[in-house]
Structures are given as structure tokens and as C-alpha cells.
Image (spheres, helix red, strand yellow):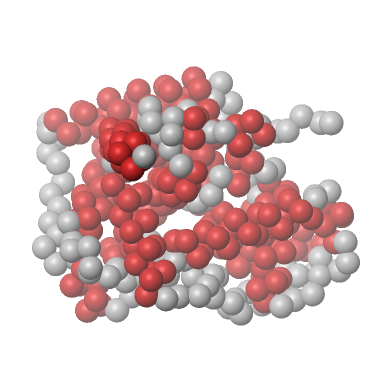
Amino acid sequence: MSRQPHPLATLAQIVSTPSAQDGIPREVEDDLRVAGCMLIQEAGIMLGLPQSTMATAQVIYHRFFFVSSMHSFGVNDISISSLYLSSKLNETPVRLRDLINTYIFLTARIKHLLSLPADQPFPTDAAGPSRLGAVGYNGAGGSGKGKERDTLWDGFMFEVPGFHDEVFWDWKDVIVASEMQILKRLGFNMQVDLPYSHVINYLKILDLVFEEDVAQMCWSILNDALLTPLYAIHPPHTLACASILLTTRLLRIPLPSNWHILFDVDYDDIWSCCGTVMRLWEDWGLAPPRGAMWSPPESADARRARENRWRRAWILSQGKKAVRRWVEERDKGEGDGE
């Protein structure tokens, strides 16, 4: 078997992640992965970085948490450091001060959302260049209803830190230390092969590249898959085929029999990837790509449960201390219950 051009997580790492070994439930870990990747995407958009840079950062972020625990490393710390490292790898340099100011703004916005009454609903408009559908993104620049958005952000104030403010130097120290940990723990192997070029080539072979909405929907699905660990588990040609399968199912376009054999992928693997992306849409309230003939079910109870997941993820993503405190309180509660 030929060696993979970029590293993938082993079966042992997938079954029992370092975070799971430290008592963090899989659902919470998955939510924190989504929260960290959303921060990378939002910061990258605000800084005008190309999609390849943001995607590389998200893949590095997922890889890191297959070898390290969220109990030991903060989600926000690794998130900003992954983006800074990716900007170097992709030769799309960004000023460190601009990156830090962007993250300070994003975290301040999250704290504002967490300060709102628990019964105040969040708008779930799924528009925007990355279709993240996260309240944190659309609240600042989405295309939702202006009145609802203005009400949500009433009272939110942000002031850019001064050049000599201590908060800048604290963040700088965090980035330097976290970047070193990423490089060391991943063995300095920063090779990332993204599936975007693969999917275009495969669509040409299947004579689908000029079908309306197909290429764009495949691209959108691949962007959404970045919020999940799929890029650290499956090779890029598998992800490309998964985006094609899910797109054609959503648009009800038939595919040739056994078409996946042509691209040397296992059907069970690509179908599993499709299921992971669809669960992401349902769990986080992300609308399917525009043009899809399907949408996840919505109810008041499901919406409240989803918003509670958002709040929990945002709170725990603030640092490793928050994660440790949550695990300790959960373990204490389970002990009292017995």
C-alpha cells in the first residue's frame, strides 16, 4: 500500500481520543471542534484570507486534538495558533496584531451572546459566504432580518486594544507557545491535501461539472465538512466523492452504477461521510446548501436544545480551565447521584 501524502488519524486515535480519555464526552468534544473551526472561518473571512488557508488551519486543528486533549489545551488558543501557522504555510501572511485583534473581537462578541437571557432565541439565518449558520457569524455580517439582528446586538461595545495593552502580549505569548506545541505534537508534518481540486476533476469525469448548482454545492459541503474531523480521518479523494454523492442525492441527480469504483473509494466510507455532514446540519442548525431538496426538521424543543449546545460550546471553548471545571462538576454530580 502506498504511503498517504498527508497523515490521517489511526483507528486507536479515532476510537479513543485523548479528550475522551480525560473524561470529555464525544458529543462535547465534537461541539468544541465545531466551535473552534467556526472561529477560524470567521477570523479568516474578516482578515480576507483565502479558503485554502482557512481550510488548512481547520485540518491542523482537528489533527492536533487527535494527539492532544482539550483538557490540557484551550480550544481558542489552538484555533488562533492554527490559523497563524496556516497563514505561513500557505504564504498568505497576516499581521499578528490584526489576527489578535480579530480574535479579541470574536471572543468579546461571544461573551455578549452568553450574557443574554437564556430564554432569548438566537436568529438562525444560514446565509453568508461560508454558510456556517452560526449566530456568532451571522450576527455581525449575515443577511438576516436587520431588526432582529440589531436587537440581538444592542449594548455590544468593542474597543480595539492599545499598542501597549497587556492583553496583546498575553495573546502573543499564547500563540507562540501553542504554535510550538502544534509543530512538536504533529511531528512537524504540516502536509495538507485538500479535496477541492479532486472534486472538480471527478465532476468532469462524471460529466456533472456544468450541471446547475452541482459544483457549488459540492464546494459548500466540503466547507461544512471542515467543521467535523473528517479531513483528519479520510483522504481527500474520499471526501470529494462524498460531496458528490450527497450533492446528487440532494439534487436528485442519478449517478452511474458503481461510479465510486472509478475513483478507488469504498462506498461505505463515503456514505458515512455524508451522514456525518447531515448530522452536523441538524445538530447545529445549518441549512443545507442552496438548491437542496431537503431540509432538517425543526421544532421548538430542538431549537432550544441546539441553542443550549451552542452556549455550552462557547463557554467551554474559552479555555482549558473551563473544560476542566465542567468535567469536575459533571463527575461530582454523577457521584452525588449514586
